[in-house]
Length: 111
Image (cartoon, rainbow, N blue to C red; front, side):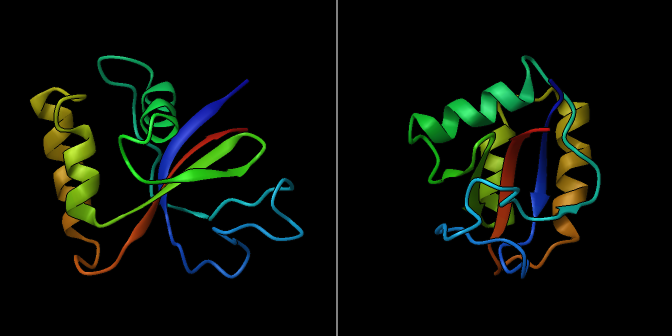
């Protein structure tokens, strides 16, 4: 099983954060950019546990996917203890390219 964590758009027309008839049939937003690398642990397991434990707000949106709607700075906060400084710097540069006053989908999914 392949797993992935990435940033997606909450307003993706093929995605419904609150469910619906397609909720367990590929209901995940399309990926923006590269997936997140593993850090001190498996990134998929880390983000999934953060959502499941309600440490960050989010929900299961598909049979193998969870999404947390977060602002770019909130995404940075999620990973600041997870990544080493080099990876954190790369993430920070990526997040600066996003609209700072818009929420994005932090997606953890099984493919």
